[in-house]
Length: 451
Image (cartoon, rainbow, N blue to C red):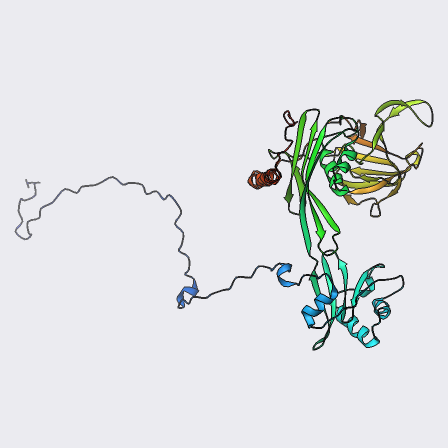
């Protein structure tokens, strides 16, 4: 029987040593992010690099650095620009039916000079739109006129270049005024006695009108103070405008103080902590008026029977300006029966206001026009069913009349935190100006906390 065991050695094969094979366990491969193809290189990198200087655009120069400044006389400008001397000057105004040529002819100019002067100025002024009363200051070798605030136009006869026209900036001076006073009869009389300008006082009333009912809350011995800037024409001394900077009122021992802060094209008003002075509506949309009839049941002055008075009446002289109580759209501006000339403004989805018995509307007021808070919309009258000149004023909440003197009005937004530091600098400038005058805000007034 043959053996099944393999021979230990074979004569025909080499000896082979068999080693054991070691196996290791497989580990999974994880990709934490997808593998993306590499971006194609920018072809620009294949070219040699060269440094290129690109000049940045220059900032727009100020007009003061470009245009000359107007002189007191036309002769001074003629001498500066042409070297000629002109001594005799005359002042003429444009009459009805006249053109610029007729004015120059009245001043003694020859037809050739008139034609050349008109050609020179035609590129700067629309001569067909010159207003009656436009003032011309005319000398031998040139003249001056103004068609927009703060800018003059000179037309000069240069001995080398002929007639030419140039613009010049009207020089202005700004002064800061501070006024304070104690109220005895009315805040208007107290402000006028302190030398406050009408424009500054009207701005003051608009600011304080958000928080104060001037007809009912002002008391004898209350006090006010304000700081405002006045801009004047340096040549004529005429006041060009005012800008209120600070408004303060001591009301029954409580201190109200608001400071202006420019927000682009508009100016906002805030207390010292940056809270807005503004409300959705001004409670009294008229200055210097007396509350003659309150909201509620009353005996009608014309019909003689008791009825609900759904607004308040402010007695004021005929023609007193009436302002919009808030921003909004004119939804009615027409005759409305017993209300006479009537305006209704929708301010938002909740608030509307109405104004009645006007003698006339402001020229731009009509249905669909957007108006701003404080903008004049009409003038006090006695149209409709009325016994005398007054404004009937209504506030409507969700189309229901409410008492304008007591309705709760939401406040405006406080100053954005990123602008708060700049605003505080405004407050500091007011304090520094007062300290330079040897005083402080409501000095020695013993004020309580602000409302």
